Amino acid sequence: MGIMEIIGISAPTTIEIIFISCAVFGAAFFLLMLVLMLVGGLVGGAIDTAFDADISLDTDLSFEMFSLQGISAAIMMFGLVGMYTIKSNQPDVLAVFAGGIAAVASMYAMKIMMQSIYDLQTDGTMQITEAIGARGQVYSRVKPGETGEVQVTVSGGMRTLQARGKDKGALIPTGTFIRVVDVINSILIIEELKEEEE
Image (cartoon, rainbow, N blue to C red; front, side, top):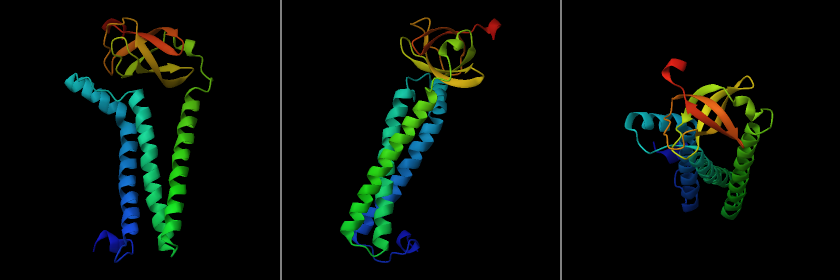
């Protein structure tokens, strides 16, 4: 029994094949992007540690993945809504139109969701200067002269914040224990903890 029989289609038309393909491949890509988003920091840290490679799934790549996730959600919704419309004996033109509306709506919903997540991170409930003196751990390595991410406890909660090294020429690998020594704008300035301080 093939996939077409499972979903109740014995002899699919070209438009049905397009909708089914969009739904399947869009859903697979959406799930892949979701998994990469959730474990991105772990994978980047493992690569850093194991191979000392110059590969990092940092914040910039995360934002790119979110836009890819929006596109994959749009493709998935185009396929699902289009297929549902055809299965309810509506014309092909209406199915394409409904799928297009669903695709645009899902991309807009992803934009709203990502903006809400960003707003939660920057809602002003935390004074960033309270992080000075805090100890934590590097989450996404801090390259020489670039920004990475660290996890520190601020205002009673664990936060993941952007950070730069006090020594601009030093590489601070993922997992390194650090101390916050200063804050410039919203970026923490950190230094590596020595073994006797840990």
